[in-house]
Image (tube, rainbow, N blue to C red):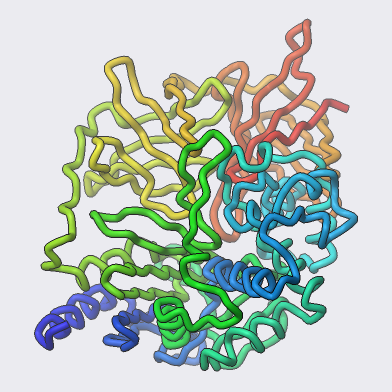
Amino acid sequence: MRDLDLLRLERRVGLLLIPLAEGPGAVVGVARDGELLLRRQSGLASIELNQPITPQTGFRIASVSKQFTTTAILMLAAEGMLAPDDRLAKHLPGLPAWAATVTLDQLMRNTAGLRDMFELLRAGGVDLGDRVGAAQMDAAISRSQGVNFAAGERFLYSNTNFWLLGKVVEAVSRISLADFLENRIFGPLGMTRTRHTPDLAVPVEGLATGYLPRGEDFVRASHGFALGGEGGMVSGVEDLALWARALSLNLLGGGVLESQLQEMQPFSNGTPNTYARGQEVEVWRGLKLVSHGGLWPGYRTAFLRVPARRLTVIFIANHGGLGAGAMGTAVLEAALEGDSILHPVPAMPKLAGLEGTFRTEAGASLDLWVDEAEKPMARQHGVAFPLGPRADGMLHALRGGFRFAIERKPEGLVLHTDAGHSAPLLPVAERIALDCAGRFRCDDVATTWVVADGEWSVDGPLAKAGPFRAEGLTTGLARFHVPGALYDAWWDVRLERDTAGAVAALLVDGARARGLRFERV
């Protein structure tokens, strides 16, 4: 990169960070050819202490941890201690029957079909701010006898997959995941400010406090869950730049190559899956992009790599209201400005009619709207995300770990998801009154839901919660809303009726846990 190009990039990044100067902030790193070209930071690591963020500040990088867990699995595979095609039950006996059907490789690729443990706990009235230990996490996973889908058929992001992979590393290596990562990855690569932190109660030197916006101010983010292979790491921009260098130069050791992490495997129906082994691999503006995001209360991370340009962008924040993916992509675009291979951004399709609440025949619901900046937006299971134009004229989710695209046809809108699945979107005209009052029990979460007067409450194994708002969309579909530390969510609830028309069961789908059956008691 020529000096003037670097000057332009520094100024572009500086402008991006200006709004963060007085509160929780972020750090940005740009690396190329093994050189950390740029480190810029803005904002406070601690509002209470008025302590600024520095390049050495540590952050919880959440799901960016997943690629380290998969690297550990591949190291053990290279040593002959396990194989990616091993069934999970071989290494972790005592789990439900599904452990005998899913492979370690399917766990790494999010095609195992296992319900997300955070969603299972949410169904039982527990939020991320509540204290949940490792044994309670294991119990929530083991209670769930059902799955989202048969292994290999579809994609659905699930933290359970990587929690269990971390357990496999420990079972096979006979040391803790923290020690394995330190001895085999962090130490050899010089990542001295990176560590795995399974217990959130243990202080971490140099760790920025995570904050969430509340009105014009901020509050400290609450989080009490034990952490594992799904998201337990603390790191910073310099150490992640060292990790990127090790990937690009194949310095991981243990016989593991970058190509193994990026190797993709199609679904059982032959359609492609762009989630590789703890990393997403996609085409972005004509270039191969390898990336992953991290999301935890008060922390946001984007780790973006363009191998063809030997370029890495790292964006990490302790401001829980930031869109790290969008801001990281803005830095990536600035770093690649003028690159002849970079395809232009596709034109935005017509947005007329892209507003309202919609549903599918299978019972999924979503909201679509155009915001004040004339940008298309969507919300599903309570999570709002921006939509962007694709070269084929569709609008797709600008959000990692999520397959979502909308096509406009003469007969209406069509939703395209994973593994080639699609469904027409049916408009929901007006909300209707709920007629499902009563008590409903689901053994897979050991929980009873109580519905009355347009509200619902939870009586779970670890907590009681509610009442929360519930709304009817149609005679067969409702939304049960639930507030959360990370975001306010909703469950899509199909109402199963008996021959007399009374609701006999609730069939519940969350963002990452599907097919929970609550029967009337």
